[in-house]
Length: 213
Image 1 (cartoon, helix red, strand yellow):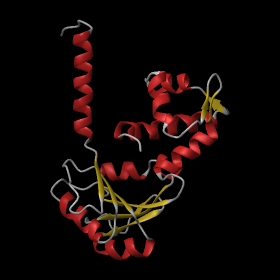
Image 2 (tube, one colour):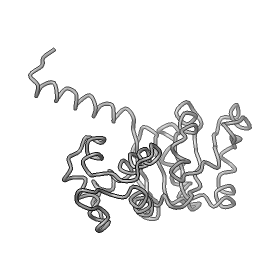
Image 3 (spheres, one colour):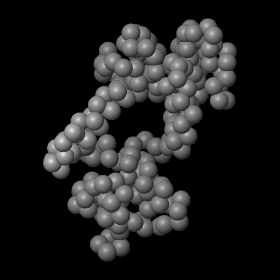
Image 4 (cartoon, rainbow, N blue to C red):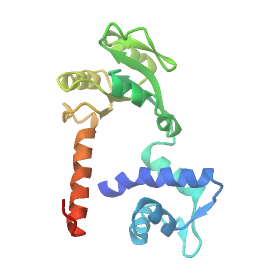
């Protein structure tokens, strides 16, 4: 079993390995990954040691084998059907992110309550009313949902998704949504909170460096 901290770094390793592979590399040493991600060599080796003896001293890791191993662990070795609920500015931006499909996440449906948006195109998709949500999830065997709705609506929409069989929700609404039952996993992403963390880190770095305003 991997720690939560290691799991949070595995997608970053995967991204860098895929970039190296596209650039024509076949092997990589832990030091290279460490420098690309701002880590140290020992941390990378500890994280990847959970996969067994994939690396060789002085030679490094075979990139293709390591990509496949990480994908198997993260569930990226299969295709996931995903829906987007909430097609505002953020939802529209998220729908155009190519990285989802590259990692096996296929956006198959988009939903909104605004009648002015329903029926319009969102890339290759047609925005559907929320009333179609349950039938669509069952017919398309959707397992994951991206939630980009106003904070007040997020808890009830999340509960509705859970009741119809969604097992994972990526919540971008500016509110912490907790799973009503253990059968659904919710990851809450608040961009303003992340900026606050970034600002704190910058201020702390300046103080440590002896800088003042």
